[in-house]
Length: 263
Length: 261
Image (cartoon, one colour):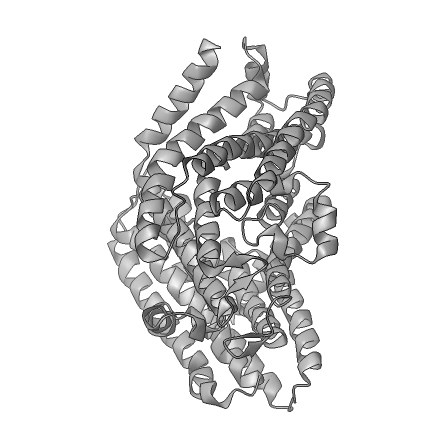
């Protein structure tokens, strides 16, 4: 266990060394939030609520989804693909730790770093620029914290899955890009799932994507109340367990098939 | 003439290398299509809940997005030099470029071309035709030339802004994140500018004129007379911003000292 915690710490310190990159990161997130803020204001003009969400809730939804993204987002899929391409993965595999576990911990180190250096200052800045609504109910914050941890788990599992596929295809650039757009669209980052036509919502119930962004953001904006919060968290929990199965199977098969190119 | 023939030679060479890895190419096309679909789906879903967005209808919004894709694709194919700093300045590759017999900017454009982006332009045209038919837009014979003019104008606006930013590397070789930031700013140009507040609208028109890539030129084809003035400024803005960029580039190249060995 110690070595995994050490890995989180090292990744955190590594990111800290390059923290100036993150000042512009904050600006990029603010620019994106701004674009959607104006779009949504125009969409809401004259309407007090759409799908049960007020404009204030929507603005908060947009801001929180982006800030939460800073935490759960990581590039471990690309890192795995790179390590396979460069043959480094051979060395990684003889080291005395679980390769996938270590990658997840590195992702977590990055996430924790961005939480403190991107999300927190970002939230403060956006709160000045746009009319955001923060809940005064501590339990909302508690549920939200739980929910974004599960977001991180599910997003990392999907990243690991996509990364491990590289063991079979060797070049995986297309799949990784496609995965990113699917997640942008169906995780609820750019549109709350409740805005989609009902048939699409029905289909999305069978996929894990909304567990990444939609559920935590709905909890934070208090658009989910009572039972809906519990259902949302359960949905996340169930998916984070289910995704372990394909991950294990694929990983077992991948280790057998490993071809090291150079390295 | 020499420039034209070398351009086509590079283009042929590029196609040969790309066609070596056909599956990669197909996958790239598909992921590009998905990228364009994300924004289209956003518009479609949003208009499930509203009929007008600041006076713009669903099909008008789709038309603007379709138009935007065409100059953007051309820009992506020929002027995508976002990694100029790392590739040419930090690694000292610029030394090699300067020894070539064509203008250094032209040489870099040749080396960095990504013709597969052009597929995005085709998607854009299909989207425009779909929206145009639904809106029953009138189309005159000369509109084709206006279209080409506006598309080139929009492309030059993009090229001008991004080349100007790339020239910063000549003065300061520190890595900067201005380029990715600008990509995000340029997204603002996809939507009608009148939804933004006055400061942002002013910036999008005169400082970082991304509005000339999407909404202003589209307004001409949509018959929005109040925007005609801006629409016809598109080629003017494109040429002026591009000229500024080339001027800055030439200034910058003179300052270039070379890095590495």
